[in-house]
Image (cartoon, rainbow, N blue to C red; front, side, top):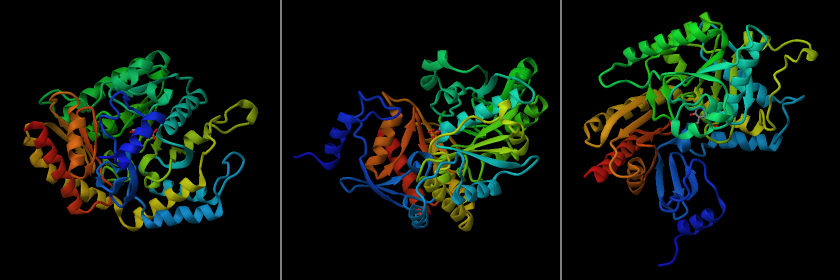
Length: 442
Ligand SMILES: Cc1ncc(COP(=O)(O)O)c(C=O)c1O
């Protein structure tokens, strides 16, 4: 038999491409999917096979692939303006998007009133870190330290790695990194310990860290409620509420990295809303453009913004920006996505989708291969019991044979479907996972 289309492309791929987070000695053995096109929740490979996209193409797709109204918004923008710099110029779609983001920002004891754009999640985290440090130098500092959570993931640029806590990804780079203080993750519980008990412990530890080092700390950075890359480690909202109070008491900024959790994934627009918390800096990326184009943003308060005002000679300016900051095409996609989300109540639909997913997954908690199921809204991690090498990868391979495309993080299988998924498609997703588990653990 001759080579299939997929095999042909994989051979060319292996000859020319270096993939992210990929051990290339195993790449071809894993028979990577060669995606040709997509529509709604479906991916089609170059051989015409169809797969349900169970992870929203790395946690970004909101409605589904090629949503006609987002497609049209990008095409319209293309007919008007492809790119204009945000340095010394501006454009209507970038302004309108900022207004829309602020309108949907979390509300409470402070208001997010300014938007700074960047390109992807990591670059927005860099923005937030630099902004927080410079804010301290211009107000109550300089304070050169950050508090980060163990198990955290904030991206792969060096600043973002500095505040990360996933050993496998981050330890190699430790000698290169910024100064940080680690706080034990509120999501890492001892057997039998409740989420509230674990949150209380982390809160006590945070109190101690701040009492001892608070005057050296410019910001605490957290993934609110769900530490995604750690395998969907969820924590109790009490932690975030206390973190808000304690950081305020010590003049420390709170950065909520909503790159993964934001834009509806947890069944609220922002995960911070589950705890009624408004951060000083909110980082958003991934789903903001509906999954189409790279765009990220840091939303912040007037108080932070004001600390950067002054005569140019005093160097209070925020000296940061990227070539594609505020890209009009990406902004058009994001604006269309956010408008459509509001018009179709997508966040409420996501909450219902999460409930259905939870109900359908519940019986799997008793499966001999399952250690724990963790979920908030649609963000789901199914931790499986190791059986041989790379168990998570094998579960996902078997699911793919059943027409569902999902990915593991170590031995946690991630489900994070597009927010507009229909009930029958949720059933297909869970049935494929259940079937794959049966095959691995039979
Ligand atoms: C919480 C969080 N922050 C930051 C990032 C980095 O985003 P990007 O991959 O767009 O750089 C991610 C990516 O998964 C993330 O989950």
